[in-house]
Amino acid sequence: MLRHSFPSVGAGLDFTYCTIGACLGHGRQGITSCYTHRLDAVLIAAADKIAGEVERQVRD
Image 1 (cartoon, rainbow, N blue to C red):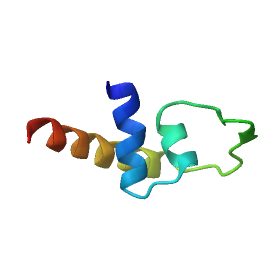
Image 2: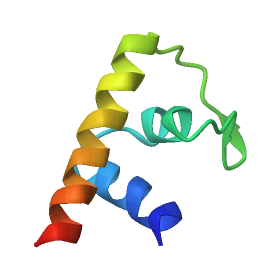
Image 3: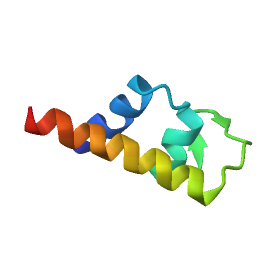
Image 4: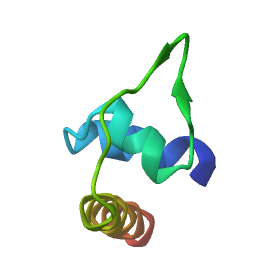
């Protein structure tokens, strides 16, 4: 379930598919590669925010 919830919540929080994919360790997004390099701190913050929202939804 989390495999699908994490990216769905991330999209709902308006993170780009490139950011979500990078948080998940994906090197490519479909056919097109993501050429935007993100700072580790940005990815960590995005992952933390998405994980917090998933946790909130599970508890509600």
